[in-house]
Image (tube, rainbow over all chains, first blue to last red; front, side, top):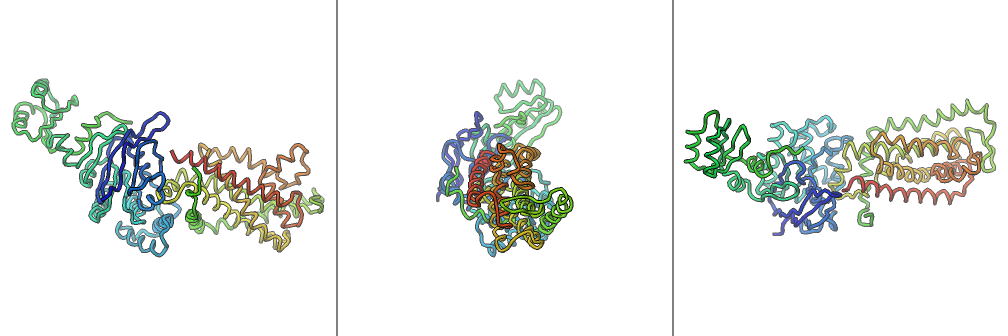
Length: 303
Length: 261
């Protein structure tokens, strides 16, 4: 079956600045695909090119096998987009937001009413259907944006940081809904700063930085490949430990007050460190996607 | 950039969105066009009638209130359309990010801009209809020719809405709308034959008045209200059509530059 998204050597330049620098990736039907990266890595720019908001500078971008520059209207009719900013219409009620938005897709009013009712029910917003958008909590507003993105029954759902700024309860509720949509076989492209979210939801993901792809793979694979599978965090490391690690060529990151050792479940190494070097505090844990992310994109602040 | 594939009837969906919103506040918006002409007529009728005997205009001798009554409709069209595509459109574009949301649907930016301008003309049309009724009841408008005020209000609304949208495309912030209002709208409001005939202006200033779209709206509305005007109505209609088209295209260009990058 043909890929839903096919991006080859995609480039976006703003006078002098290269925001996206030759990205290539594909998303297969039914895949939950993650686009991760630090702020300014080019994620939102890529997403905006995908739904035809931003014109591409160079490369090839095909969605549903069609060219975005030529067939933008046909493509956009089959995409649902959940933008990073709250773009809900504050002049309209919750239900009207869905109905008016359905109009932009040319969906007949009678069909729109049925779908709006279903979506409000699915996202637990039925009791708020006549409320003003400004009266909604952050979590409810986000759910309404998701509902709105699904009003055209899209074949591809694009989510730009769908849970940023939500409290843990709301975030988990959104995850639950996204998992349910994934169950139904919807193709999803998501950007997020929550590695836990990406690890849980994504079948496959790429980590981008400075407009380029660093890695591409399933979350579990990436963790094994790039963060060893398990980790020891040693606080207050001494010179003896540093000498031991460099002498034995152990994979690690030295953060000054803390050393992170990637042990690849090496029992012998675990024992040695536990018995000889854990003078202050040691944490033994499984490695996570966050370790992969920080290892690949570095720990310096971006903004 | 602007070609036939980017503009379709879909723009009416955006127009409808503004109508749905307006339905919530129409009662408040109804009052201004209803009371404004009464206030002006009252103020100028009482205050000016002693100062100004008669106004000679297009071969007719008019009382001052007869002279300004049609112009009041034209200025209402100007304010309604211009405010809608400046302040109101800017709020939708910049603060509410309404256009960003729309651009994630099969709408094009050109359709959104067209809809905003057509909507502003619709609002102006509504205000003109109310004022026409009020002034008609007071005997300031001849019927049935006065009914032609309605299409003129829509056309004039398109012209004013288009240039307002153009300013929205280039203004750095909402406060900067003071500039086009001070430099363009206010002089136009005063010197378009609204409160005194353009023929009273010095000869060198008269052609400038003729460039104002408000002048042509005032001329057309006066002709259909009173049966006479200084400029041929064909010229005024063509001028308003051209003005609307040129600034609609410019508005699409500047908004494209502003939002799509």
